Length: 130
Image (cartoon, rainbow, N blue to C red; front, side, top):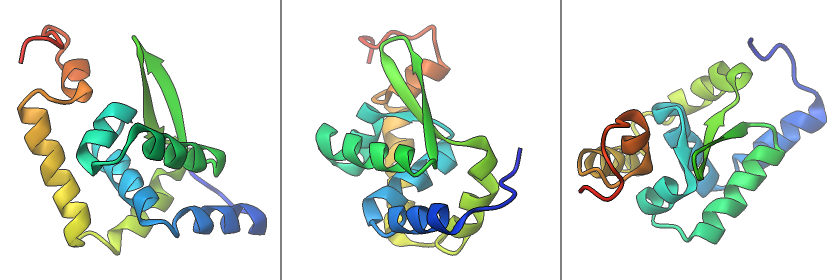
C-alpha cells in the first residue's frame, strides 16, 4: 500500500517530526535496516533509552513508524505505506556523513553480535554467546 494523500495537518506533523536530527537519524536507520529495537538504536546513536523512546513515540504519534513485539523486545519499523515517501526524503541526504557513520556503526556492531537485530536474524545464536 502506498501513501495516496496527506492532509495539511498530517503533513505539518510529519515535517515537524523531521525537524529534529535525532528523529531523521532514527528514520534513516529504520529505512536502511527495516526494523530495530530501542536498545540497538541507543547503542548505535549513543542516546539514552529515555531520549530514544521519546523520539520513537514522537515518530509513532506522527504516524511514521509502528512497532511489533518479538520476545521481550519491541521492534520499530517504518509503516509500509510511507516507505516510498521516506525513501524520497532520505534520498536527498544519502551522502550525509552522520547518516553514513550510523550505518557503519550498525554494521560493525552487527558483525560483532552486539545488536539484538543480529540475534533476531540468526536465531540459533544466544544473546549470551558473544
